[in-house]
Length: 443
Image 1 (spheres, rainbow, N blue to C red):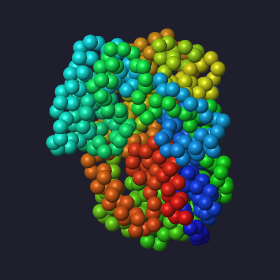
Image 2: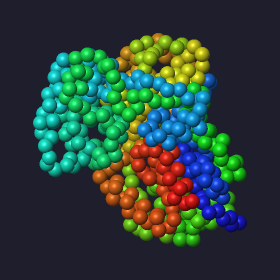
Image 3: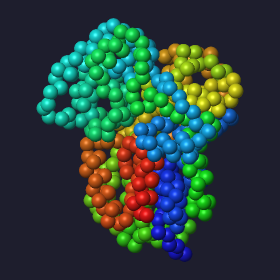
Image 4: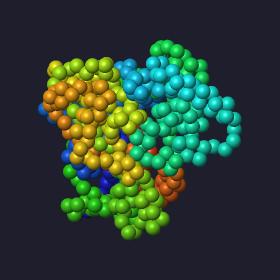
């Protein structure tokens, strides 16, 4: 059986849903979305167990794009959204300091503050032209100096990416990491922070439904007959503009919007794909993130009770980030309860044992004083959720590989969009606007 649609969208994550939404807005309603899972959302999903809700790793909404702000706040979520002031911290040397670490040293041991300040001053003095850094690790030393680099930036990034920072580029950073000015660092060393820094100093989060509320909001605008769930694509013939489904159906398309992982897209194209494209796809790197979700009886979380999330750069914990879902929305936990979500990155460079993660996380939470030994009795729910792929890795060949693949796909009327489709570190608002651009490109 063969079907034909002018536009086929692969994947019903935020980008794919946005593409469909904007096609509907433009009156281009002759399309379908193919999604292998039984629900929409991709990584923007929320699971609930025994009353405890957890996103698929931490998600927050913020944007500088006026269109994305209006769409998310006034059309999609409307009354189901609340603005919050970020309460995020770094835990180093047994001390909590506000994020970003580089401008909030107040409370750290004096010798650490001195090393951080002197290192930054040395870096500023040395920053005068010359060749660009060769890799991410060198960029960190150049921008932050030895103290901040070695006390926080390098160990944390090694744990987050689970990768050799000397094998990573740094052109993805943009304004994600606030670069310190000496005056700000001095002020942040002498007194508690007065103002917050960074693009997510204020963020939004759904009142109910977790981050999946955003995906569900998109779904309400998409006719059910255009959204094919539980639909598995097993092959793509780019020359014939044809998608083959597991049930034997064939779908002809005019243009294909792909939001699935770029290596998977190339693999689906099979042996007809030129060998250079296959090699580039195999060269694309990524890591895996395990989230350990813990539901606790009792609402008291001691000194972290008011925090949203915390960064852990030191090897005293297996997890590199902890978040508190109930502080994003009280609807994420049952009344009188609390929860923790812990993230652990894994790759070929940093393996871990998934089977022991829950016990390791509980032991580490006790070791650093966030929980006490008797709190083990408070655990009502514990689970490991694995995201694979999680973060794309900007290795030193990333740009070359993606550029070569995209040039080939363009010849086949295939439009890769979204975080995994483009193989780029995109925020949710960028995935949404990427879907909009994909719709506009084919209208």
